Image (tube, rainbow, N blue to C red):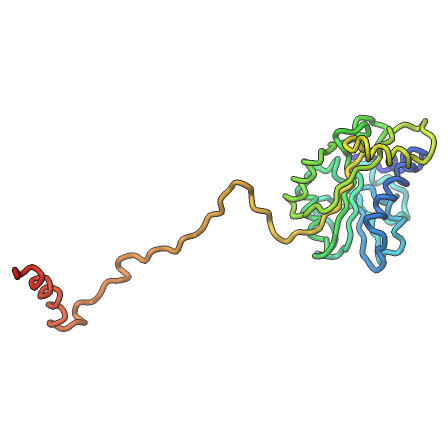
Length: 260
């Protein structure tokens, strides 16, 4: 069952959540420094991150409909929707940010196909997803400790199978998910990314929309050969030829067999 929206809101209101938001926003802003005139969709629980993109033409937070989501305070710019039926027209959004959106999805393929549908042809998505190899994926006090975490390979296969082309990969949240740490966590990010790049708490992957399905490796593409015409297509009506033309092959055969 997806996490309760009130629990997620409480996490981001606490010191650990505020530090998490601050560190992730630094990475997101580096990828998308200016969204002026762009239409932005946040899926999952992306509302804490959308606020910083105030220059966007439009920013909508879409939350998967589930028990607990209805408890979100009224007046927030968030709509509830089904993951396999997003209530938006095709090609509407220039950018899509997914945070806390993949880990507990009931059908990842259906969700990604919907996100592909509403993304503009030149649009881009960024996915923030729990790293299977991190401590954040093992601790329940972290929202990244619920649902399914991912390896780099799993995300890569998932995105390519849904017609997205991953263009940029990185990891973040190298500090452990504890509230006793002091500071802003910047030193943890610098040291961790250099010495222990595989243990970051989350994957951050930016991908573009692909219009062509990838060819399966190792499988030869079937080539359709032109069908041979059947013999009846070449039947000739003997009545159309004169008696001289009909007897010509017989005369030629006799001449060839005659002794010299």
